[in-house]
Amino acid sequence: MKKYYFFLLFALLIISCNKNSEEDAQKKAEATKKIENEILGQVVLQNDSILKIADFQMRLPSNWINEEPSSEMRIVQYALKEDENVKVLGFYFGDRPEMAEANIDRWKAEFTKTDDFKTEEFANGKIKFVLISGTYKKKPFPMSQDFTETPDYMTVAAIVPSNNGPYFFKAVGPKKTIENDLPNFRAFLSSYKQIQ
Image (cartoon, rainbow, N blue to C red):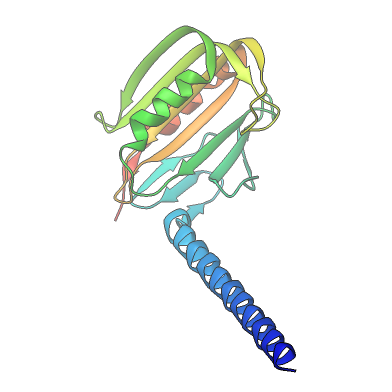
């Protein structure tokens, strides 16, 4: 009989611990989600022509189609009218200035062969604009380890400063399509204006 009571007490203790563990895990997940929302949940205001984020605004090109971001990592997403498969994506990773150079290195590493790499500056040197062309590692989905070497591809990306840390805008696609859109991307960056 003592063995039975001991077994019952032991079983209740395990159930109680498991319940506490589940509650702790749920609380931790909720806290993590809240922190992520505070970091990534930047207020983005836009209409057909203006994008406002943090303490800056930029004018949107008329040939960029506003889309619902298809990933939580994206704060904005636009398709090019010339080729709606090519997207201009906006990202924010928190107040982490060190991400700027790390992202440039990562963008370079997305090519197996680089034909051209250059940078430009906008807004009196505040915005860094990167252009990379060559043979791109085209993946079936972003985190895939598999890729197809795709020649004549181009990445254009910009690092835009704010009081909340850097924002990143990037487009990748066939070189001809991206080159055709370069005047629009440059106009977008040239329209950068700090606001209160």
